[in-house]
Length: 225
Image (cartoon, rainbow, N blue to C red; front, side, top):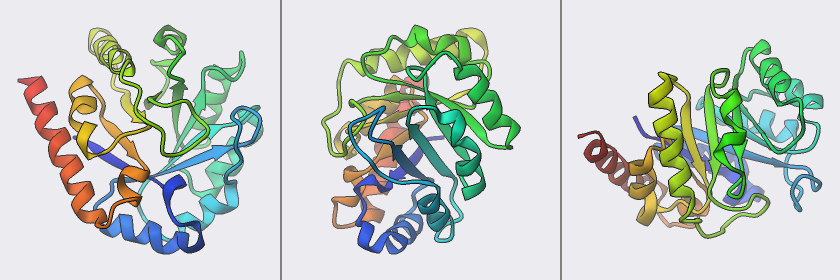
């Protein structure tokens, strides 16, 4: 099943609650929240209080992507704020495994993230302990970037690795996903498509999400066949 995760980084923050309610009613499956600290990436975004506020406006799973240094200091705060999935980067440090275990101990779903230039091999040691692998298809830090086509190979490799090892982690892809390329991302093996401007910059959230899902599911079905 394809899941569409609406990334609020591209929403109108002046009316964030309304935007979250709108994409919830429009058929999004998850709400994706990008947390940036101005150190790991050159931008500064939201903290646990915003996650807590978003939680009040939707019953959908909250998918919190930590683009921060020292995530071990903050995972509890984001868990308590209402996050369901919490993602940390393999590039952060040497304690990735312990952070992932801490997320699970908090009753949340741990996920590991690889940047576009990071080999998939960096994530392999963690894939038997996570609920999800997040593959970045743009360089993290800013919204509305173009999809990096070379990442499709990494998605295929992750899907092949999962099948060969009999693992069940979801494959999420984030960055530059819009209606026109949803099919090729899903065909490569993605289960969760994160879209920010691809949804929020359109005039009709419902129509956009429905068409993105339709194209992705058709492509996935053909791939399975």
